Structure formats: structure tokens, C-alpha cells
Image (cartoon, rainbow, N blue to C red):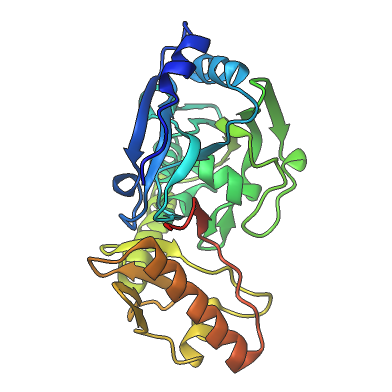
Length: 307
């Protein structure tokens, strides 16, 4: 699918824009599944003020969505109309430590934030070492693993609203719940501050090594995947429900339920986004029929289905 070119109109409305605008830009290479259609416009802001300038001058009728490193994302085959914003490490990747506070840009990798905390002998952020994403997405979904989640460590998050206004949210204002936050979806998280707890370097490194060992032995991290597909229902493990419903190894087109960890879907090589999403819905239906339990997607699915 090819979208109409609106970049000349955008440039005319924003003569002082410093970020990069690309039209009909493929998004598949930016996702871990390596599937999906293009963005009508892909915007990479130079920094926070450039992002605010862009959103202030963007027509209200043009849809906007922000994506991170694409590790927990399905972009549908028809692509996305409007503007896709993607923060770059150059403008939003800074990580620094001051006392017991870790400052991180929205494009900083979770793993890098964990490493910075460890280097400063700060504990409590080790779980981030096992999350293959960026801080912006982690804030949005209250990302967690290995017994920790963003809610446990966040001091304050900064975001730019759809109208270009800058907002700051303390932990309580984020409205965290399991794999979710209450902040309006149009807000773009640009940075955050986390609090760690001073601890011994050896103990911190041991916990990080345990996190990595678990990922390597229990998850298909070298496949084209999107991480955990479904949220764990209260009192249950999603993978156990999927396994009990006979879905381990199940295939739809080029998509497969991982044999290693059946709450992971993988692109075996030639999958489409439709294959992956259809496989996920098939798993949901089988689990519902077997156990009566509804599985809810943890992976975010965006865009339009190819006609």
C-alpha cells in the first residue's frame, strides 16, 4: 500500500523543523517480527523541543502514534496512515546517574539503563536487563520481568502531549496497573527518572546474570519474535494455559507458537503480520475453549489490514 504524500504540506507548516521526515517508510525493518506495512510519514525528532514544535504545528486531523524499538509490536500489513514518531538514541538516548537517581531518555534501551545502575552500585533495576525494549515503551506498559516492574522504581516521567505541551507525571499520576499505565495514548514519553537502592556490585551483577541466564534458557530470544504475547491472567500463567490447550508448535502460514516458550510467537521466515495476528487469535480461541479463560494481548497491534 502507498499513502498520499503529505510531507510537502508538513514542511510548509513547520519551517523550523529539525527532525527527519520520511514518506511511505517501511516499518517492518524497525520491528522484531520484521513484518508490516509502511508509515505514511515517519518522523524522527531531533530532541524534545523539536518534537513539541512538530506536534504544536501538526493538523489535529492527522493521526499520530509513537513506536519504540519494535520489540513488543505487530505492525499490520496495510501500514499506518498519518504520522509515526520514533525517538532516536541520538536525541533521546541519554542515561546518567546522580546519587541514587538514574535519568534515562525515552529511546534508551532498558538493558543499558540496568547496566548504568549496576555501574553505580544501584540495585532494583536489574529486571530491566531482561526486557528487550526501550524506556518509552516500558513506561507505557509498566514493563516488568523477573519479579520487578517500572512501577517499583519510577520517580517521574516526562511526556509531550498531542498539542505539544510538556507534562510531568509522578509515580502515582501514572496510574500503573499490570502491564499498563493510565496516561493518554497520544502522549509521547521522552524521559524518566528512576530510584535505585545502593548495594554491593557483586550482588547486583549476580542478579543480572541470573536474569540473562533465564532469558537464554527459557525464551526464543534469537528468533524473530515480539516477546511475551499474552498477559498472565490472574492466578494463571499464559504459557501453561496455551500449552494445555495443545497450541505448542501451532502454525498459521509462516507464524508459529514457539516450541521453547509457548507464550512467544515467532516469524519462521516468511510470515505476514496477518499470519502472526491470526495465530494469536487462534491461540486465544483454543485457550478459551479448553479452560474458559480469556487471554489478553500484551503485544501491541497497530495499523490497518491490507485490503
